[in-house]
Length: 113
Length: 113
Image 1 (tube, each protein chain N blue to C red):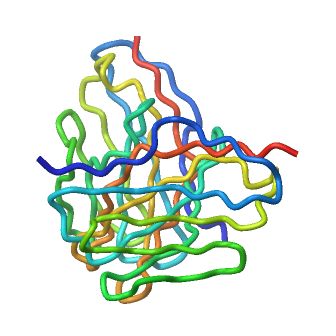
Image 2: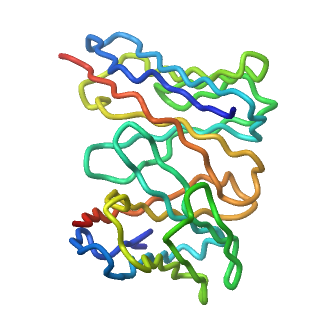
């Protein structure tokens, strides 16, 4: 199993550009989440999904969109990038009904100029 | 207001000693509390989960305690090794049913040989 994979590993954007951060998991997990990690602030939840077709907002959803058309994939879209979105983004997945431990991807480092 | 706090200062200890990390929270009633390890440039890796009705949990050299009255969890690493050097994150799971976690900012542990 590859676990949770994220692409790209690193991206530089200009203010106002849009992009999609990809996340995929091959563990057949129901739950998937996106977090951002900023220095000194820990991980903050952006959006999450409890299954295909179901998404909801987390703590810091503004400026981001998500969709979940399949169990495996959970892309995060930045509609119009802003310097405040410079961060490291982590995708995570977990299984419903189990210990609910989360498996994290390796992260995408995003720099918005 | 709701807060989850970990020691922001790095913890430096000598190899072989027990490391104790603290996680305090206010105005939350978590169903579970989880501890993760994060190495530089990597995603968090799950270590231990403890439920609200459990006082203590152990796994090899790791021990977690959970006091819902004090709203505190302690994370212990016994016989610490330089390889234990990393940032340790605590996370609250409020519902135990959606894969949403609220993270502390993490404590960096440095174990010196």
